[in-house]
Length: 168
Length: 131
Image 1 (tube, rainbow over the protein chains, first blue to last red):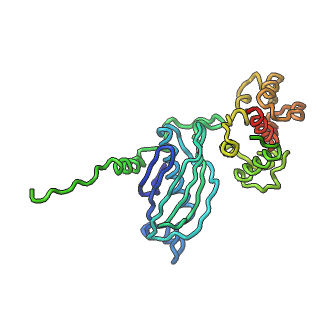
Image 2 (cartoon, each protein chain N blue to C red):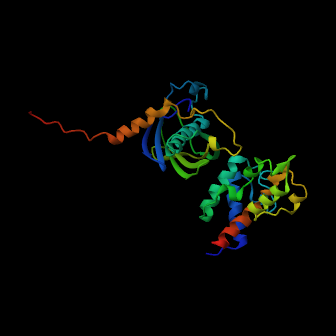
Image 3 (tube, rainbow over the protein chains, first blue to last red):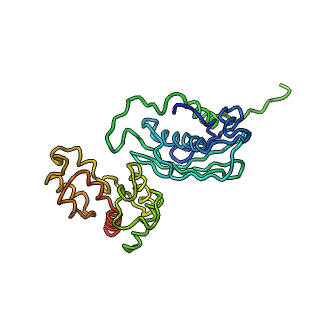
């Protein structure tokens, strides 16, 4: 991942499902041109947000040893515009994971409304059929994104707030 | 739980329609996956995943699409054609595939044409009946 497009993970079940949040803001410069006077989130960036959510789900399942690359968009259906101020919830569910590849299904919602359904396939590119070689370094999972996951781990581990003793 | 060959064909057809975004009518028994239906390498894995889900069986990729193993071996390929030994290996690996036409001119570029809808139906049928 060369850039981060999702804001945080809120749920993470290793190898099964992950939930992230993406908040849309008019501070995103592309929205000024897409479209002039009518800012809407480009659908391709909804696919990107799902690819990051699902891609990290797939990568984590393999201990981040594989280079996980988006290989195929099996389905991308959009039901409504997304505009500045919207908070998107992205849920990715693992369907199959094999040594060479993985497939996921996903759904984007805003409040309870379904915004998009996006099903993806990822390739573990070092296991490619052609036997092609790639650089040793894992250029997909760099240190850039690890803070995203650290937050969800912290959320789970955070102890319940202590009640303040009064009058002590 | 018995399933007739027609039922298997119908389910395989559904799998290919979903995986390759083609129409029902295009998925004929003789259609080749790459030439006629436009499958690329990642699609083969997609098809394998979907077959596993549809028929509830594990499908080792090298059983259904076993070609890569052959091509990297100099004893099995010579001048862009499979040698007699190569052909024998191929025959052993793909009992569910009709090789009569290919054997006349075993050009490796034509290997892709062996992957037909029928070959998948034969494979699944064989697995179901063996179980």
